[in-house]
Picture 1 (cartoon, rainbow, N blue to C red):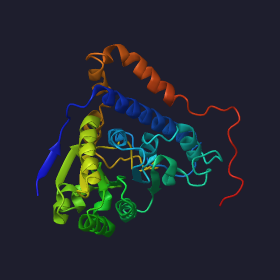
Picture 2 (tube, rainbow, N blue to C red):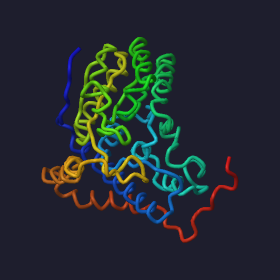
Picture 3 (tube, one colour):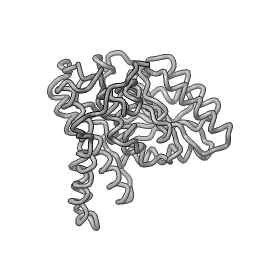
Length: 320
């Protein structure tokens, strides 16, 4: 099978700006969520995707409204990128009754069928076969919907990963698998427990799929590869496996200081998540130059429109 390494293409300026707005908002939201954790306001655990925003923004921009997103417990960015308002998502993190799941699901179970967000799954790899089921339903009903399933590199050593790829390939299902490879399977370096360099892309060929690796910190490149994979799926050409190389700024969860990672690696990884610098490049060309300041202000306004009620919503009246 062919190997594809994707770089930025000539994405339309309006699309670039839309993705920049999305990334800015996602970064601001999760930064605020982390601050609220330090203030002991966020209930339960949480897994932030700070540094990985380009994947969520690029795919959400390329997807149609009725496509489906399946995310992991690190799903804040994917939920928001599909258009779910910030207020119910943050309220869910705070365990309040006006949360997305009425304050009963918390950070790890964000779901909004209205926006095509079909769940955030806490069991590693469990949602890959479920995404196949959704894709099979689209195929059976004759719609052009596509299921997009995001998962971490840790899922690639689990049986459901291989079962889902095999099933999707045999039935040529309209599903796009996206491995968000941030180099660490929780607290273990991926290369120490995996026999191939790219745990998703290098194994895709065993199921007759193209080996696709993309810079997951470059929203333009992510958008390009997403658009291609989605078009293939809609045309009945079957599934795609995309491995997006990225890096999380913090630890695995809010309780993880991530001291196991070398300082030089963290510094290098943080520099690669450079959407703000890239956006400044957008603003120096053509119409974007005059729009750059309003763009930043608009993005900041969305991120600062988080709930600031003097009397916050109550906790749920019942646990279940």
